[in-house]
Amino acid sequence: MAAPGNDAPTTPSIDDAITDNNLQPCFVLQKGSLRKSERNLSGAVKTRRKIDLSSASPKASEDVEDERKEENMKLRMEAFEIVWSKVESTIKDVLRDINTSVFSEIQTWVHESFNTIKSLGTPDFPEATQSFPIVRDANSKKLFTGLFFTKNMEFVDDLLTFEELGKHLKSQGCHVANLSSLDFTTKNGIGGCLRSLLRQFLMSTLDVTDMSILASWYGEQNYANPVVVVIDDIERCSGSVLSDFILMLSEWVVKIPVIFIMGVATTLDTMRKILTSNALQHLCPYEFTLGIPAERMDAIVKAVLLKPCSGFTIGHKVTVFMRNYFVSQDGTLTSFIRALKIACSLHFYMEPLSVILRECVLEEDNWELGIEKNGLSPELMLKYAFDLPSCQSDEMTEQTSESLAQAFSELKRLRNEWRAVVLCLHEAGKGEKVRLLDLYCEASDPESYNKRKAELDKDPDVPPSGPILIKGHAISEAIRLVRDLSTAQLGKLISIWESLTTGTEVYHRVFALKLLLKMEDGKSSKKDFTVTPK
Image (cartoon, rainbow, N blue to C red; front, side):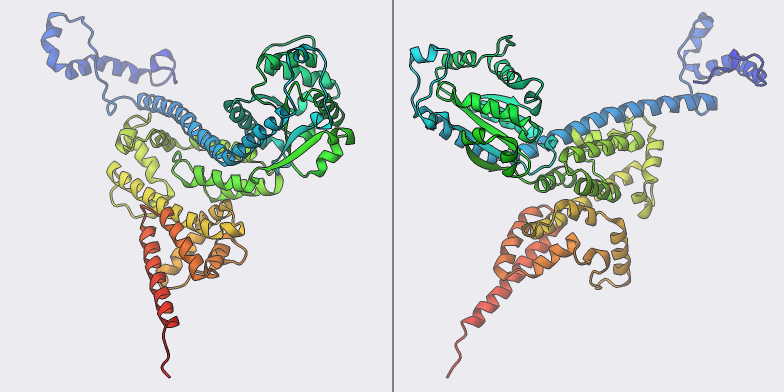
């Protein structure tokens, strides 16, 4: 904040400041005319006065504006926290829904394996209290092992998946311990693995690491539920330590019915390279496959960028950059989500109007109310809004909050129409692996839109051309697939399109297409049943 004029006696403006101070009492008396009688009775009484910014010094106006900008920045950061929290929770819900089916499959397999182990016989009290394992035959040393193929070169994407898997199995009554590659290091040896198991199952840290302690603990559980050990990424584990761990647990299967779930990022050959042949002989493997990263990416794009999750979305250039980084350099959802968070924070930091997204998340659809509590003057906020390219491209005669509210409402409607078309294209190309992220990149390209708009301005009936239909592009591929469908297949696709476009104008066009298809199908049916007279 700049220092007041009377704090700098050597400045040239001091005479002006003195003059202002001499005039100040007149100004106060003039504004306080309603309380003039009170001043006559007690002339020294100080009263609060309302400063008219139009007659105040420019420096005072600037100070007030700076305070408003600071308040706006504070509100923007608060809005960012609210918006990103919504985006993050949406992503977690999407990934959890994707994993639900495979989690249920694993849960069923775990209980079936547990019943098989129990069929070998449950130890009686004397056997259970002995401090050494029980081996009845070769089958009693088999460890049921679920190989969870994640199809990722980077395990970072699957940390949350294995955490959620552990929670799911616990909710179904299983005793679960989640181990990582850090528990299988040459430095810590097999003692590190066992120490981690005891800490998670017994909920305490013990100096002594002995399997008999774990066996005694499980005996207290009445042998009622399976014991599941989840290892998130075996390819990062020490092969010798993991092999010794498997051999040790195989000796205690009857007393402790351990069932393994191991994360494998690549192929089954990895197991043969990491584990010794002796350890492999004790495993009874069963394969489970998680959805590939591209499928999970499509689900995230649909839930976060296409659907009205938080009001925040990203433009063409940012999307292309993030897509290319995901495909060619890193390939992990975690890095994509981190980049999305950076883009989101940068948007809130640079754009004063971003504070309005707080109302979008909290479902407060009131533009004028948002203006009053965003930390900036309504005039300045309207100026920011009408400086946006989307407002400049349209001819708005009146630059008011009402016209801007109408513009936002229209933008929301158009966005819904655009979203419906993109989802329909994705549904058409899904079978041939047309990715939603690729469609999003192409559909959000403003150059293609501007070129197409210019073509339609010249001739409304001109067919689409240019980059949008280049062979090999996602949109072109989706359109080609629609053209190649049979009548029956097209009918099924249109039914799906109807559900995707409900509540939009696109729905009416889809419905018209459905009627046209029925008419054509009816004509062909009549033609097939026509009897030619002899």
